[in-house]
Length: 232
Ligand code: C5P
Image (cartoon, rainbow, N blue to C red; front, side):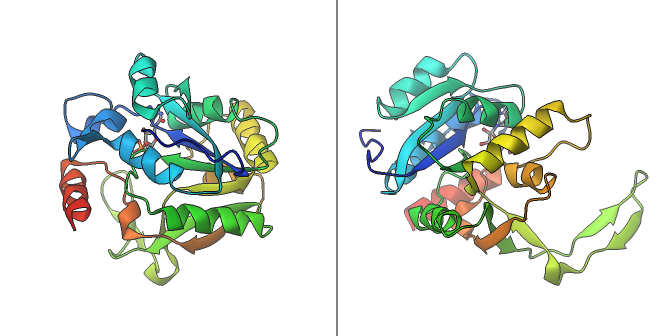
């Protein structure tokens, strides 16, 4: 990527890119899988650098692939080694953000086609005074809770449910506190995102509209869908 961060930007973005991508089938780590000839991470970083508010970008790379990732993203982006799980990768990236950034966004490299407008909307909602902001979409399927033997425990009211995307935006102190608390907490159900950690602090999380383009590329079907979306 030849673009760099905007020195005047007030937002730091952390990119979790250290996942293995097992659900995509055998191959390199997910962020390095190709989409129209370029790694997913390159698509994601290029879109993030297209946002003028982004003044700092830190990528958590798959351990062992740091040099490869540095070559891909260019000198304007900081690269750190990711951890064994997503939360550890985000914590490692957060530790590399200079003090002056008071707004931090956390993004999945797997959401490689996220439009810059979604990044801007999340950052703007934090700047407007919200401690934590997530982009969400209505769910299309009926959602039901299932017990250990496969029996239905109860069907949820879909009208109140949303699917949660990234980037998720935070006042920096809130994100730091959420990660510190998660690090010391007794093992409970693993949080699958950062807003989940922030909720445990009792901090209110606000929503903004997400986008179908911000889909998390997880399975071969998602990769095929992303190829089509890029061509459209
Ligand atoms: O596994 P999941 O699809 O929830 O991963 C979401 C994001 O977290 C992906 O972009 C993946 O690269 C990242 N991740 C990470 N470090 C890990 C595991 C996942 O940065 N150890």
